[in-house]
Image 1 (tube, helix red, strand yellow):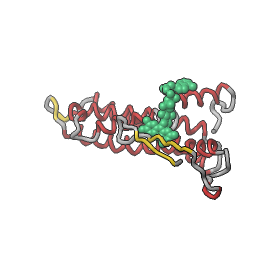
Image 2: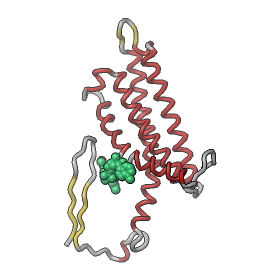
Image 3: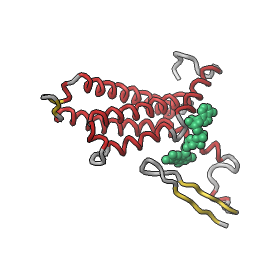
Image 4: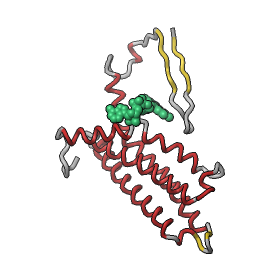
Amino acid sequence: MGWTSSYIHTMGDWGPASLYFENVRVPAKNILGELNKGFNLGMQWIGAGRWRIPAGAIGTAERALQMAIDYAKQRISMGKPIAEYQAIQWMIADSHVEIEATRWLVLHAAWLAENGKDTRHASSIAKLHGATMANHVIDRVLQIHGGMGYTKELPIERWYRLVRLYRIFEGTDEIQRYIISRNLLKGHVKLGEAL
Ligand SMILES: Cc1cc2nc3c(=O)[nH]c(=O)nc-3n(C[C@H](O)[C@H](O)[C@H](O)COP(=O)(O)OP(=O)(O)OC[C@H]3O[C@@H](n4cnc5c(N)ncnc54)[C@H](O)[C@@H]3O)c2cc1C
């Protein structure tokens, strides 16, 4: 009788743990929510995570993009700072556009939650966009840093591995797309309707 756990190593800094419960009795006073309603409780938590994760992705992406901006101004290639090359400028611009788009999607989902409205559709949109954005931005930031970005001298390669998880946990990209398209196909959500 009791419980054990095992840590699973991943490509990122942390990993999920498996928990095993055998003949464990939970005193009534320790039950969270209602008996046999744990799945609903868990889904409420996961639902909120779907707009909190892209909120975190904005912070990670902004920190990384600022590093790329600073590096581009001081790295000289072929006689001038790489910030003066349009190829680099476009990576910076596209990254900022995607970050700002995520910010508004997150704020909208958070506003819905704060006002007691159904956040499921808006949260899936924010999660899908935020996860995609973070992966695009970190990839560009690494590219702007060139070979240095690939080394362990800088934290970028670690962030590159970390943000890959955003596309998987709290509902994969595919599951967010499934939810969004199902809501539209079934008419739960109408195009152009304020969600
Ligand atoms: C580092 C890390 C931390 C984690 N932390 C937690 C945690 O704290 N709590 C927790 O509960 N879980 C956690 N997880 C688990 C995570 O939520 C799951 O890995 C994730 O939901 C995907 O489930 P799965 O791995 O079983 O993939 P699967 O469900 O086996 O999916 C495999 C692939 O098939 C696709 N797929 C599956 N079903 C469909 C479908 N119906 N239509 C289309 N495509 C589909 C998926 O999108 C994916 O691409 C964590 C995982 C990792 C890696």
